[in-house]
Amino acid sequence: MAIAEDQVRVTRGQTTTYVGKTGARRQFCPGCGTGLFYTNAEMLPGIIDIQSATLDTAADEVPGAQIQVAERLPWIDDLTALHRFERYPGQ
Image 1 (cartoon, one colour):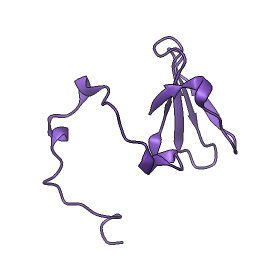
Image 2: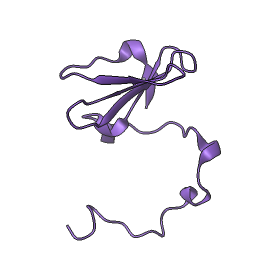
Image 3: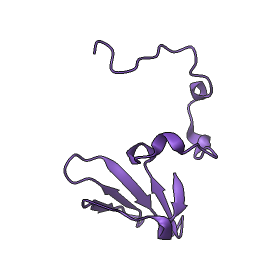
């Protein structure tokens, strides 16, 4: 979920940041390792990419577009035939 950086506010906890060779920054929870944010001032100035599943309101955030589709696998367009599990199988 990409939004303007100035619209993001972390209300509790701390993050750890990994800075890649290109200057891209990945922030994650230092306790459990969950990825939280991605920024790249050169490629996406002023934008923060938030891992949507980490939001309290994730179910309310309807996608407006798909990105990076040039690398998608051919089977991703139709997942309806696959078995579905509410949790890991066997739980």
